[in-house]
Length: 124
Length: 287
Image 1 (cartoon, chains in turn brown, green):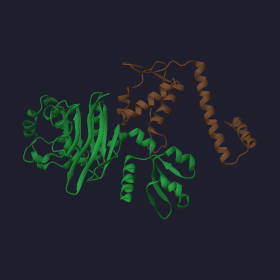
Image 2 (cartoon, chains in turn purple, orange):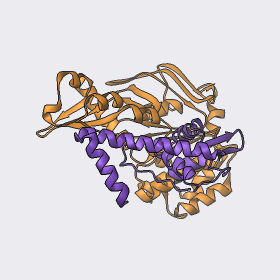
Image 3 (cartoon, rainbow over the protein chains, first blue to last red):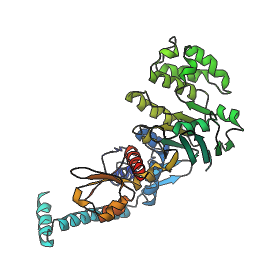
Image 4 (tube, chains in turn green, blue):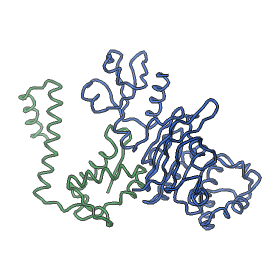
């Protein structure tokens, strides 16, 4: 598992941890049932507060990404393939929403945006 | 969850300075940074915790017990780190050990020798010839060598170089578990504030805030903008405002609301040092 904390980022540290662990679960870098470091040892490794790592794990639990068994620790939750795809779609939609917002700020019309997407779909 | 330290309504009056109604709690399993500018009352508070000064009012409980009544048994369980070298000036490390070891029921000689080795402390030199950093390391070694459950440290990183400050963080995090606690004071907040779970900020003898660092960091932000961006509404919300020739900088206590209402302003994540600076500046402005 890789986690890189940036002090320059505007994102809160717990959000950075959530994003990175979530991404590694969705890409399969972290596999089902894999044990995650304890809250305390992750805090120690990253030299941050245990409250921050706890907050991150709670968020991941709420999303169903990980499961915590009392006394045993936290594990990557079993992911339903369908559900996983749905979740990734959800993330993708979020990204598209960001794009749309940015486009509105730049006063780009729907037609222009669609053209852009078409061009990029051919190229990328 | 139990409190390892409980301070309620603590008062101490001196000529020209007083601690007013100091209250804060530290839960088992957590690290608290006690921060504030020089002369804010940090050392006085810590001396009151250690019963080295007599309080004028209020209550201090450590491990759930009154710190004066149960002083002896409480101190046996505390590792106290402070600049205490004047007691040992003429002694070398062996003598210091002979002097300190009998004071603790659970003195661990092996642990002490281990720390002396890791910290590279000279065995034959007299303590008065130690550098400031070496004295602090000795104090830390003594504090960690009697199976303490609570570390109370007054400015522990002063005099330490950046390399050892980093090691120091590891040592503190290794020490921690669910039943222990750490309280450290500091006026430079950049290194230790990384690992602190809670912060208590004291200024002019009063507590300005005491809360989890997470909460503080999420709530506060540093906002920057051009001179034309300020209006009267915004001004009300700015803490410790600094206006320069080309723009302004201030602390805000509601990041989300400012971000949505003022899209052209730059809002940055603060450091504990930022929060301390702006709050102190605001405090001075109000007097």
